[in-house]
Every structure is written in structure tokens, then in C-alpha cells.
Image 1 (cartoon, rainbow, N blue to C red):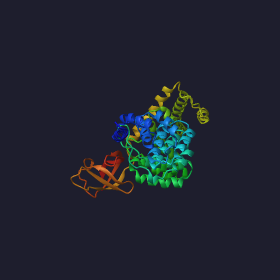
Image 2 (cartoon, rainbow, N blue to C red; image 1 turned 120 degrees about the horizontal axis):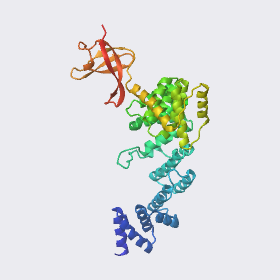
Image 3 (cartoon, one colour; image 1 turned 90 degrees about the horizontal axis):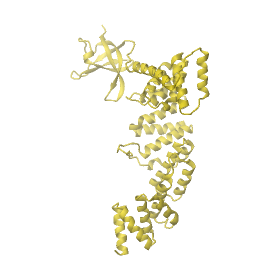
Image 4 (cartoon, rainbow, N blue to C red; image 1 turned 45 degrees about the vertical axis):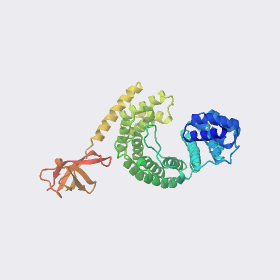
Length: 424
């Protein structure tokens, strides 16, 4: 083939994504003629065939040789992104990542490349809990320019988009900066834009309300979150802490225990176990406090984390109360704690209202197997017609108890009327 034929063929192969074959030709072409097209094609095919070390060496050699040529500039930018910036581990040094990112940003990348660079900095900063960096770098992006198409995971499932991830980063950074009003505005936007991820943004709203001291509003946020079946244990933990601060300690402990029963990695739940012990001390439920305090102590020791003063202080409180309960090891403390979790979880799942409730029966359709009872306190309460008294009719005044149920249509926990009786 002539030089021009090789150049045409290399270009065809590259566009057809036959990068390995195109690479062979681009090597020959660049060795023969050093021009911006041959160099850009060579860099492109080196990247696409994962020859990143060679691509980086070549990029370092040519540097800004044809930087006014858009294709060459883009190839240099993406070579540095993939071959240098992405080579820094996600849990790597933040400053090193920032230095590399700034070098690439000096080349004035397009919006997509710029977003890729900034999100890499954000990810490394997040791994290092560097919220100052997250605040600074998230502000470098114009959210309206970000791609809102869901990203696909390894199994092809749709997840977060770049835009929704930005909202998550930015809101958390604003919370850390104590800029709560700004954070709340973005949170409300995100809740509207991303109903699939509502619980995450509603949780952030709850955190904002806690930070502002609006505990009742925070409680409402968490109550909406935990309506769904199989709620995450850590959300129940946070909800329990809100309830504790409000003073609803009994309900708080119930949620703590439910959280503990759903948590499978003990080391992730050390703070939960300590919160349980502290709350049980307040409630004078000392056997439960002791079991969870020992569980906390053993877990921390097993991980080499040390024992904070607050734990030693709690042990001293139990000693002052003459509570002589101890456990020899983690397993024995855990087994005792599980008894409390199981008991409380069972009580929660089967909970029936203690008082009779009065309402008006509403039979909307004769074909449907269900009806509703209208109440002042609870609104419409679902019931099955088979549970109604035989002589019950639409509009009858009835009394009943409520048992926890699940609304499959709305995918939330709800209540069902049982023990229904007519009131004459």
C-alpha cells in the first residue's frame, strides 16, 4: 500500500473500532511522517488497546506539539486522564490527585472531559472524607451541563446519573459547610428530580433539619423513609437517634433493636450498639445496657480500635448502680443481645393497637374483597370484607383494632382493621 492508502485504511479501521489493526498502521505512518493526524491516531489507538504506559510516554514526549489541533488536544487530555489521573487509586492521596487534575484542566478540556476529571477528584476526596475539597471541586461544575442518563453497573442495571451524583456530593458538602439553607434548596430539587433515589435525598433533608434543630420536621422525613419494606438498618438507627433527642425513648429503642436485627456486619454497627447501651441506661434497663456495652467493647478490641472514654464512663455508671453483669467474650455478649433484638422485632412486627378505634364503614364497591373505615385520627383504614360483621353495611359506625400490614400497591407499611364490631 502507498502512504496515502495506508492512511485511509488506518482511518477506516479506527472508525470501525478495529483498534489493534489500526495501531499497526498508525505506528508505520507516524514513523514515516510526524504530522498531527498520524500522532493523534496513534495516541487514540494506544488508549483504546490499553497501551496506556506507551501512550503516556508519547504524550510526555510530544506535549503541546499540535495543541491547537482539537483532535490532538482531546487525545492528550484523555491519555492523561486514563494513564495518569485514573492510575491514582480511589483511596489515594487527595493532593496528588488535585495536582494531576489541575495539569489536565490547564489544557481546557470539553465539558465531558472536565466533568470526568472533577468527578475523579470528588471520588478520591470522598474516600478520604475531605469535605473541604468536595465543596471546592463540586462548585467547579455547572450542573445543567451534566449528563442525566443513568449509569449502568456490571450487570447492566441502571443506577445514578452524573447529575444526581453531583447533587449528592454538593448537598453533603454544603451540610459540612453548615450552609443549610442552600443544601435544603438543592435537596428539594433532587427529591423532585430523582424519585427513585428519594430516600437518600430525604435522608439528607432529615440531617439538615437535625442540624437546624428542627427535630419534629426531621422525624417526619425519617418516618416517610422507613415506610418501605426492608428499610436499611442505618436509616432506622438515624431515626432512633432523632426520636431519642425528641424524648421518645421507648420508640427510639424499638427502632434501635430493629436496626440491630437487620445489620449483618457487626463492625459497621458499633455506634448503634453503644447508642442502645446508653439509651438503656437512661431507661434503667440495665441488663440490656450491659450486654450491648460489652458487645461494643469486644468489637472495638477485636478491630484494634481502642476504648473511648464514653464507654469506660458507661461501665462506671453500671458499677455505681451495683449492676454486676459481665460477659467473658464477644460471642456470649452477642447471643444475649440477639435475644433482645428478636423479642423487640417480633413485638414490632405483630404490634396491634391497644385501644379500640371508632370509625365509619365505607364499602366503595360490592365487587372488591376489601373496604375502608373512615376515622378522625388515622384517616382511611383498610379492612377485608370477610373480617366485617355479617350485618355490616356501608355507613355503619364500627369499632376495631389495628394491626400492621403492608400495602403492596404503594410499597409501604400500613395498618389493617381487625376485630371489627358494629356500634349501636
